Each structure stands twice: as structure tokens, then as C-alpha cells.
Length: 254
Image (cartoon, rainbow, N blue to C red; front, side, top):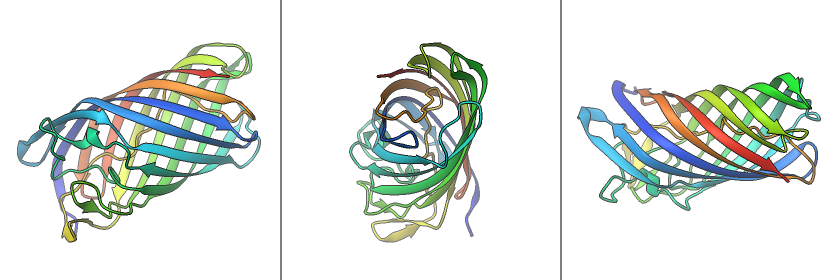
């Protein structure tokens, strides 16, 4: 049975760059490029890790079940894959991979599927100023990262609220926002390290970009930039991780 009471606290700061393109008014494709800085982890037996650097790039595609309505309930399904292009955000100050708490899926090819919703309130020139959103998904990992970890499969979910304090033009051609999110990860099964099962892996995998709000728009690119800061992060057990963070962001559609 999984152990409990690990009392692991993660504090991180993250810059996330994003781009999204509307293939149609219901299908979008995009990418997320994260950078962590001044990351700190207080782990088991009070060992500390700090680090910074590029995270893994994620490619994604999203399908909205009906044409997007800024005032209505909008549901989508999404598929994505994280590419082990960076992962140096998960090393300590000496350049070594953080042990024992490796982020699930970090440094590995990690496909995922998810479903979610978005709902807008308080319309202003065709743009909802307040949004609620949430999702639930499943992550798988393939291969092995540079720390030797493999098989960090996980369920994840999130709920959040996002406020757009200002924008220019219809449908948020340019806007800046503020977001607050609660995220949970459930690690399904055991990790292995160099082929040997381990039971002490926990941590944060799933990061959102809550300050930037994407809506499908046929033939349009949206580029975004946001900064996230943690309020709280806790590994309750080997299967459940929760975090609370807030984020500021800017976006431009062209």
C-alpha cells in the first residue's frame, strides 16, 4: 500500500510561453514552453533542492464539442504530448537530478488525454471578463529520464477562476489577466528507477496557464506570456498532490 504523511512542500516560480492556432472554430492546436526559476523543494527528512531552467515542451490539440459561446458552457476534449526537450528545471543547484521526488513525466515522452470546460460571465464588447474552468485527464510516460525514472503514470485534475481586467477589441484581441488555480495529481501505480520499483516519488506534474484564456478562432494565432507563483503545495501521499497558485498573464491575437 502507498505510504502517507510525506510532508513534502514544493515552491516554484514559473514563466510559461504559449501559442495557439485555430484550425477551425472548434479545433485548436498549440504548444506550451515553461521555464522554472528559483524553485525550492522541502522534501522528506527536510532535505532541500533548488533549481531553475527549461521544462519540457508540450504540444496539444483541442476539440470543442460545439461552437464556442463566450456566455455559455463550453466543453472540450484534448490530447497532448510532452517532449523531453528541457527538464533541467528538475535538477538541483549542482546540476544533479532531484531525488527522490522527481516530477511525474518530467524528462520523458508523456502523452495525455483530458476533458474540460470553460464558462464566461460579465460580457464586455464580446469578451467575458470572468471565467471558470476545470479539467480531468490521464498522463502516461514512455522511456526513461536522465535520473532513471520511468512509469510515472498519473491522473490529474484542476479547477480555477480567471479574471480579465482589461482588453482591446472584440474577443480579446489583446488582454491581460489574473488567475487562481487548485490542482490535484494522483499517481497511478509505482515508478521504477533503473528497472527497480520505488515508492518515494511524488510531486507536481500538471501546470496550467490560468492567467491566459484561449478561445477557438478560425485562422487566428494567439501568443501568450504568463508568470505563475505558488501559494501552497503539498504531497499528501504517493498518490495525491495538491497545489494552489496564482498567475498574471498577457496575450495577443493576430
